[in-house]
Image (cartoon, rainbow, N blue to C red):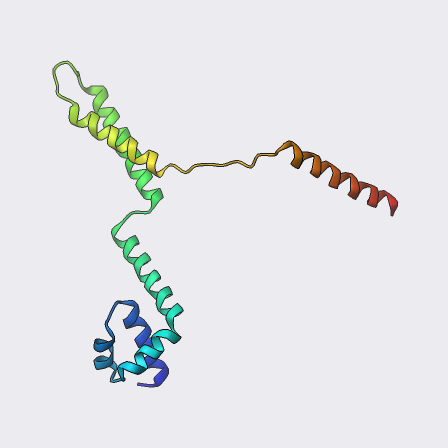
Length: 140
């Protein structure tokens, strides 16, 4: 195996969490060299580790959009089922509790929207800048 191939393999193994001892045995490279490579390729190892963690997260967890869609569909189903029920004779506490949990989860995933606000000073400054540009334009 060429040295560049060994370095790439080292980066992959390190990003996967293998110890220097295990990598040294696997690649047949001195531990001191691996420690040096670890410092040299610190960014590459961190980036690859982040990519692998993201892949695991995508594999085992849903995206925010998928969770919102799933919870939204569940809320609609629960509401339809609750509409069919007579609360006076059928215990529906579990469905009501589930509905509240889904609504709470959706609120946690809610995206807060902050709109830019113009302050009076910003508006006056913008008008002054426009006036200056207009004067410059008329001068030409």
